[in-house]
Image 1 (tube, one colour):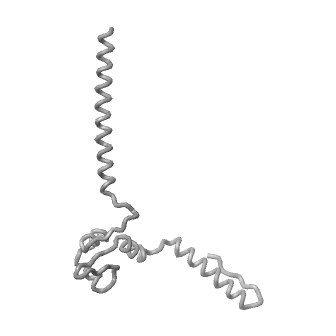
Image 2: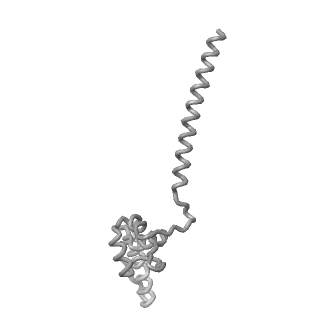
Amino acid sequence: MHIIIKIIMENVFAVMEERLAGIEELLNTVLARLDGLERPDEEVIGDLEDCASWIKKSTSTVYKYVSNKQIPHIKNGKRVLFNKKEIFAWLNSGARGTLSDFRAEIESLCRFLCKRVAAGFKERHICLQI
């Protein structure tokens, strides 16, 4: 019986060693990926190729944007550099609103106009509900 317990214990420790090795390998993979991620507080400056990859355009298109002063950029001698945060802000500034955004804006404008009309006349006016 003493031999059986010893064999079982050896198997348990072997299994535990295998699992710990697997966990260690997984942690090393996660740490390597985390090292590759950009920290949000850091300012990321990239060149023409970096910017092209950020906005999914060709380098010639990005260069055309630079020549037409359509994209935020930094001139450093002959080099053109881009701040990643500014590039994404520039992209988001051209984003179109959703239908609910437009509806809320129209409702707000309607309320404003109704108040202005009501203030201009002594009698009450009925505003349309959208």
